[in-house]
Image 1 (cartoon, rainbow, N blue to C red):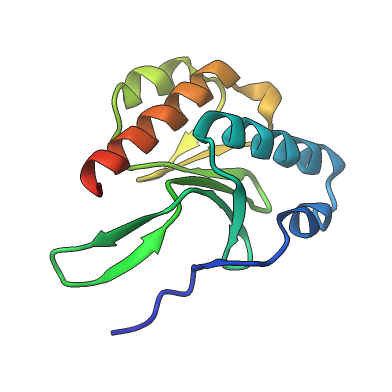
Image 2 (cartoon, rainbow, N blue to C red; image 1 turned 180 degrees about the vertical axis):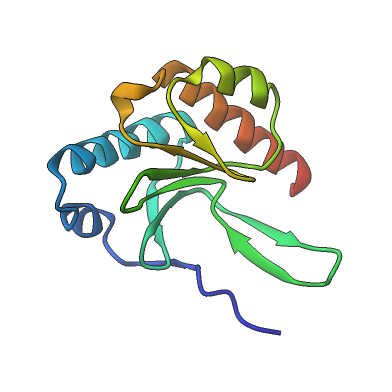
Amino acid sequence: MALNKTIENNLSVADFLNGIVDENKKADCFELVKLMVDTTGYNAKMWGTAIIGFGSYHYKYESGRTGDAPLVGFSPRKDAIALYFSSQFKDREQLLSKFGKHKTGKACVYIKKLADIDQQILKEMIANSVSRINSLYP
């Protein structure tokens, strides 16, 4: 079975974020770190080379595959900032309907900038996602 490529490591979150060329995106990402630390109580850690995660959990799928993943996280991508949540959490659709300008994937929510979203809703989504993951993987 292949090893997971995205694992927690000791790379510097600040160094990674300081490498972002777009000054507005860089500022938003530093603000996201503060918001996620405050909301989760976990310090920011690099996962792989491009994901900033908060907390962690150990999973085991029915297939037998196991690994560790951040409870929540984000990654500044070229076109958007990807926010990583549980694919299902309490009030997900209701919260997303009030969230602001975004796109969604299975577990990711993509935003262009913090000014486009309601940060209080983001905090609620983070808390609900962490709660969901902790209930699935105690």
